[in-house]
Amino acid sequence: MIIDAHNHPDWHKHDLKRFLENMRRYHIDVTWLLSWECPEDEYAPSSALPPVETGRPIPLARCVSYAERAPGKFVLGYAPDPRKPGAIDRLQAAIEIYGVRICGELKLRMMLDNFDAIRMFRFCGSKGLPVIVHLDYPIENGQSCPRPDWWYGGGIEALERALRACPDTIFLGHAPGFWAHISNDGRHLTEVYPKGKVVPGGKLVRMLRAYPNLYCDLSAGSAHIALSRDLEFSRDFVLEFQDRILYARDCFDNAHQELLGSMKLPPKTLAKLYSGNALKLVPLSSNAKRNRKKIPAH
Image 1 (cartoon, rainbow, N blue to C red):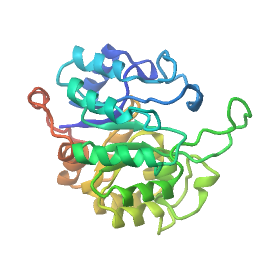
Image 2 (image 1 turned 45 degrees about the horizontal axis):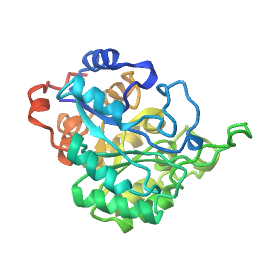
Image 3 (image 1 turned 180 degrees about the vertical axis):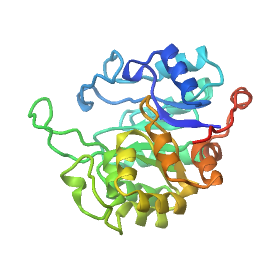
Image 4 (image 1 turned 180 degrees about the horizontal axis):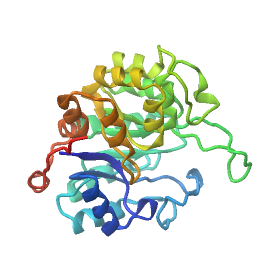
């Protein structure tokens, strides 16, 4: 079985029909379908985004529409902006009404240990919802308007503080500001996607060893580039943390499966990455279980 633990509705010009066709092509049984809620002035304009409702680049309603039209194919994720009054009440309502099982994607120009965020993260821990967080550093993009950069989450230290403050909450780290710390080279402040041999002793490795509530979201170019830069190191990394890495895409190509296939990992390890770890965090409904398929050979 394969679970894509990070994707979005109407993302990269994929409507529901194209989305399901893509899942079939790459043998993906179930997708974690995530919202993205933030103020209008906090998201970078992107051709990947669907037509935008004010203040909500990817609203929960789009996720719910997919789940209602394709039962058993999607697990719903929703992350309200914790800085807004009533955020936890809205998350609770989404759990009760729509069956939301994941808090994500949280992608805001906010320190992850913001007091309101910590309160919401602890709520998620009490409800068994893993939290998917996006990290980006303030690397200038050559523009001065509307913003010179697009940082999110406040860096790896802010994530570490949240991990300490919420030991009963599972966090999945994601995006360039997370994966750049696989290497101890200090390039996270100057390069969005560092390349080259990994320098041992990266902050990400140290945090995974220190915090059992930290997991890795394998999606997007950030994870793919990080694991591609030093395959010998990456294979050891995956083997050491195989119980806390989730296959995910945040896109619609097959690069992540191809990368994992090139590592010649044991079948039991691949089974954990492709579905075992996701099922440990979010067990599937009976409808999704009926749609299971075997992992294809690489």
